Length: 409
Image (cartoon, rainbow, N blue to C red):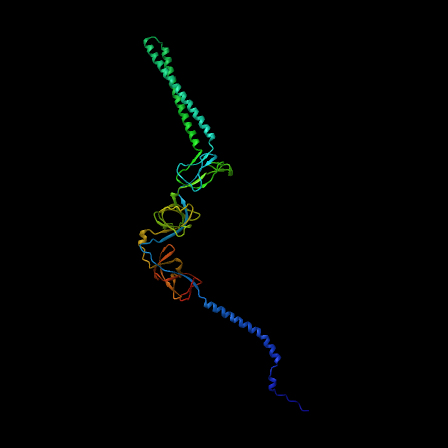
């Protein structure tokens, strides 16, 4: 039996089965689509990032201020306070019967602000005045008796010289005169004491009238008719200690706390620039009046008081204020000349150098600059840029030299 030889492969054997080919391609097709979508998404994100330019805000460098402008050496904040402020109260405890003041009212020194119930004090005053009148009448009576006794003594002396009257009658007449003179002195002293008591009663009666201690404006009304007031806290919450608060508007000044590390930069007579929180665009010239010679141990600050160079009705007590302490005129005149002024936010630190970014043809140019004195919100630039150039004051992310940017609208 002849063994069968293996058959040679033919072209038909190399053909793929149509069913197998279709089933394999169907399994690979979703994966290929997903991969293409991921590649498209990543490319779109990269393209969008590449097309969106960083956004910056710019400001023009201003020409330098000439004429010896004073630089800011220190900034502080505080409040407007009056040197003369008084919460007016009665000297005694009593019930309020009338209040003649209201908030915002202009008052003058000695003006009546309120009255208390003085009925009891008035009765005491009337009784003491009656006693004074009795003492005065008694003095007049003794004066009359003394004059009569003196005439009797003179007649007795004449009769004694003539030998008609006895020595005993003369002694009696003299004793009567001496006694009446003593009674007259007592009566005079009694009248003086009664007068002093009457003056005290009059003062007590005056204490029931509350008056303004100085010219000013009433900023509060703290009591109403029918309430009890007292110079000391008494009776719990049912007794008031004040009737009205008076402020002398002519004594308004600024009080700020300066960190003790910088107090050496402040001295009496130093010029300053004050800006009220209520009027941020209004710069008010001020001058350092005094540096209080004591420090606050808890806050490590020293209190400084400044006076306004000119008062204005818009300045009110307890307003918030920011103060920029300036150089003196002598210090300002010796400062080196500046090329321009830029906002302080445009100046950046890069290691040990001070730089700004200048915008030129939609690209950033990094410039090293020399900074001078601060002038309010701006800084003097002594070298590095010129007036009129556009500097970046803020931007998206980190900025680099030569970077393309767009200016915020």
